[in-house]
Length: 410
Length: 92
Ligand SMILES: Cc1cc2nc3c(=O)[nH]c(=O)nc-3n(C[C@H](O)[C@H](O)[C@H](O)COP(=O)(O)OP(=O)(O)OC[C@H]3O[C@@H](n4cnc5c(N)ncnc54)[C@H](O)[C@@H]3O)c2cc1C
Ligand SMILES: [Zn+2]
Image 1 (cartoon, chains in turn blue, cyan):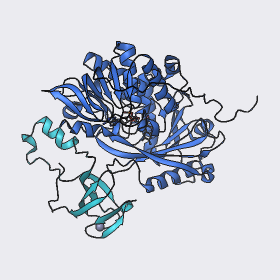
Image 2 (cartoon, helix red, strand yellow):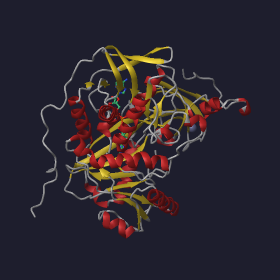
Image 3 (tube, each protein chain N blue to C red):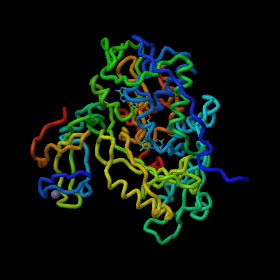
Image 4 (cartoon, rainbow over the protein chains, first blue to last red):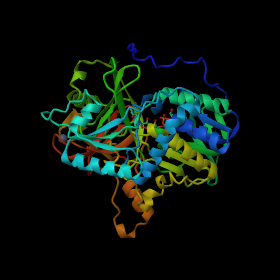
């Protein structure tokens, strides 16, 4: 068989996928933020609930926020039932999304390894594998040799500072081409008559008593029957204009890519303990992510020492990376909650809904949360899958505590 | 890389410090008297401004003392640092 050049699977781009309309004066639903979540929500509002008099307002360019900046890892191997329910719903939708949108998303189920480096890591990982299986999520525990079979470039030598003691493996996990996901949704939305309005910053939310009636924007006021926030790291900025407090802290999160390499890395590898995660993009770049900066920030640039730490971890796990050059680094702003789980649901204001707090891991939820958030908006009550992710849980104490459990640190 | 002015040691590299989140958050005087909402507010809800933020830092790899910093969360410009006992400016 002829060898394939990396990137040969990348499709050609059509000239134009969506219109750039001016905003109308009123909509049934206004969604703030044209990231993956805002777009997916609009899509399922139209597809599942027949609501198409909708605008998605974006202050920058479509999907230029965290959607354009993330490392695109998709998996559903979460510990708690609530999270497994939501992320597995998303993964099942991912499996049919290319056909649904009739657009190439390069969804690649190449599997994910979550490494264990200490006895406690091993125990936590085996526990998570068992929890996953009970929830119908595919999961296996691999010893170091088996992990190396999945990922031959992985260094399983016992002579390193944090040796690999094994790994959990989710074969159905993988990556997708983030831009294509956004464009696929955008094209479908445009065809269904939804307005995607770029360069339109929402600066305030209009109320009559406790009911939402519209938004103020950099392009004038827009009336709305319902307003849904999907503004990721900037949700607090919008909520503050209403005096609505949310348990969110916004942090920079960085990623970086190498120059293009031949295919060397067949899967996704994540390590919580030494904190790096790596996959190889379709074109050939190694894509590396790490942890958030510890302090709050909106500057979309992270600290250099995070990169240093992440690189030293990567080079120990994959010695062959030591000769790869870094091509570019960047950061997004992610909003983190105290229990490391999202907030998706109604607010104390009638007609105002929030979808926020995804922290470092919301890309994988894109179709699943869009589905559930659309249901929440259409029916004025949460879908059973997002009901546990309410704002009230911080008062009732029914937290979905994925800190440490989620297979990645936040 | 930020240069953080420890009020005890002077300016040092950010890698010597840990950030402890919002400053001037007071534990309820009588925990039994507060409602669930007030208790949740104390435990989980913090200011998250895009702009100046009063926050706590500890000089973990230096004098190991806690102090407060007022920092712009967009530019990382540090406007002041002051000892814990000093009042400073509370987040709006
Ligand atoms: C470096 C990095 C790596 C990541 N890696 C992964 C990963 O591997 N897997 C994973 O599952 N997740 C990952 N994530 C997290 C994931 O990217 C986010 O959780 C997800 O993109 C959130 O979706 P969103 O649509 O809400 O956000 P965004 O794509 O950020 O969309 C929000 C949009 O709202 C807009 N907006 C904000 N304020 C306003 C306003 N006032 N008016 C109008 N528009 C506004 C923004 O411009 C933005 O386009 C990563 C994130 C980063 C930064
Ligand atoms: Zn000091």
